[in-house]
Each structure stands twice: as C-alpha cells, then as structure tokens.
Length: 433
Image (tube, rainbow, N blue to C red; front, side):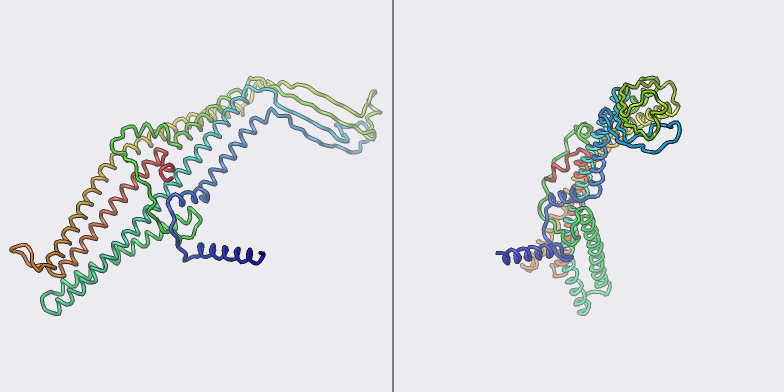
C-alpha cells in the first residue's frame, strides 16, 4: 500500500509538472481565468491589505476605551533623599472615559473601513475587466490567425497561378508582383497578430500566475446584455459603481475626522487611571517619610481641558480641507462615470452598425466566391462577360478572408465597449460567472 501511494504521488506530481511546463497548453474558461486572477493579482493583494489596515484602525479607535496595563520596575540604590519613585515593581492602567472627539474618530474609521472594502470590490472589477479584455482579444487573435492562414494559402496559390500565366505569356510581371505583395502583406499581418496574441498571453500570465503558453481560450464567453435602449444606465452606475461608493464612504470618513479634530480645543476629555507601586527599604524612604509603607496604590479620574493648542487648530483646518477635497472627488467620479456610460451607450449603436455592415460584406464575399466556384464547375458564366478562371477563385477567397477579418475586428470592438460599460455598472463579475 505504501508503494502504491508513493507511485500515485509520483504520477500526480508528474502530471502537475506537465501542466505547468513551459510548452504545456490546456483549455481554460474565462471564469477560471478571472478566479485565478482574483487570487493572484498584486492589485487585489494591495487592496486586501488596505482593508486589513482599515479594520485595525477602527479597532484602534474603539480600543481607546479599553484599559491598558503596564508592568514596570525602577529598582536602584539611592543615597540621601530618594529622588523620584524607584520601586521594585509597579503596575499602571489607563483608559479613556469620554472624549467629544472620539465618537467622530470611531465613525470616521468605520467609514474608512467601508471605503476600503468597496475599493477592494472596485479593484476586483478592474481585474475582471483586464482578464476579460485579454481573454477575448486572445480569442479573436486566434480566430484572425486561422483566417489569415486560409488567406495565405489562397495568396500562395495565386502567386503560383500568376507565375504560370507569366510563363505562358498571358500575364505581366506586374500581376505576379501584386500577388507577391498580397502574400507578403498577409505575412506581416500574421506577425503583428502573433505578437498581439503573445502579449495577451503574457498579460494573462501576470494576472493569474500561470505560464503564458498555457492559455487556450474556450467557447466560454457568456452572452452580452443589450444596452441599446436602456436610458437608465447612468443612474444605475451612480448607484452600483463600487468606485463611486468607495469615494462616498471616503468623503464621509474625512468629514467625521474633521468633526473630531474641531473638538480637540476647548472640549474637555475624561480619563481613568490606576497605579500600584511596591517600594523597597534600601532606598531610604523610611528615613525621610514618617509613615513609610511598601505598598502604594492610587486611582482617579483625570479631566483635561485644552484651552489653546495651535497644532490642534492647524490639524483641524487640514482635516476640513481634506473633507472638502474628498467631497469634490466624489462629484468628479460621478461626472466622469456618467459621461463615460453615456458615451459608451451611444458608441455601441455605431459599433453595432459597423459590425452589421461588416457581416453583410462578409456574406457578400462568400456569395461571390460561391458564384465563381459555380462558374468554374459549370464552365459558363453571365452573358457578355469573361468566363471565370482559377485566378478569379483565389482572388475571391482572399477577398472573403479580408471581409471576415473586418467582421471579427468589428465584433471585437463591440465586445470591448460592452465590457467597459459593464465595468462602469459594476456587473462585470456577475457577467463573467
């Protein structure tokens, strides 16, 4: 049994090594890519650390009311009149009873924690958008590369036909050169597309922590919602956008902090303290104090009324300015988001119209190719026109792939706009899953 377990672990580790090998590839869905990115993205880890820091800040403001305990010792030999309070050991406890500023600080920290949590959600939406854009772009790059391969085959066949026609004396050198230029342009386009696909894989690798070569998109892209006739998108973005809600909570935190700082002057503060000291005999206390005793204990309430503190007044002015700035940032975020949503909604109609036109042109190019193939198979053609030949067929194939590439690019542009719109509405993660 131990041998079987050892072999099983070895096989499992070997399979894992194959999956993470530099040349390994496996199909992976969009939802899986986003989930991996949410676990591994540095942006998410930074935002999560901000949430933890904000939670600790809130606990710190509340813990001001919790008594603190300090154990110390000031043991030392003294000659003559004892200076200070050298003791064998002492225990001190202090806490805040009430401060007119502290409730505002607690509310400010609570709003700051809420802002950090909303900012984490906003960063998750941003990471989901980055993943979706890279994943969809990689998917379209692969589709365009497949189309370019077909176009390349047709172009090479066309070059061969033009070379034969030139040898037969029915074509010019210019015809062959044009065919070679078409093939060279296809090679250049393919290089550009391959570079873009590699860039998208590297981006996905940085987001997820997986090897770049392992990304093979699947047909896992969910259907997109229709935003064409929805006139409530701007209002929905104001209510649901995590970035706007985070800015609003941050403005509330700054405002509460300003309220607390303005109550630092002229407002009393109440504190509670307890102290115990154990004094030693070798410090000569009994020679200078008539009723010396080893155990000493005191408890009391401290009332502090700050009559003038220039630093506190300056801090209050600074906090008030930060509160005004935070409120202005909220309004700026709302204006930018509203403008972006409306711009995307209007541009989507134009992008869909272009995609529809590209789709019609793609269909027409396919019909032209089929017509040429029918003429070649039947040996006839339209009256008063030259009969079709193999050169016409290859030209029609090249034209078909060009129109198909235009349609793919138009479709990709529509999807990118829809993704940006869902990012503004705060619904992109729901759409991914």
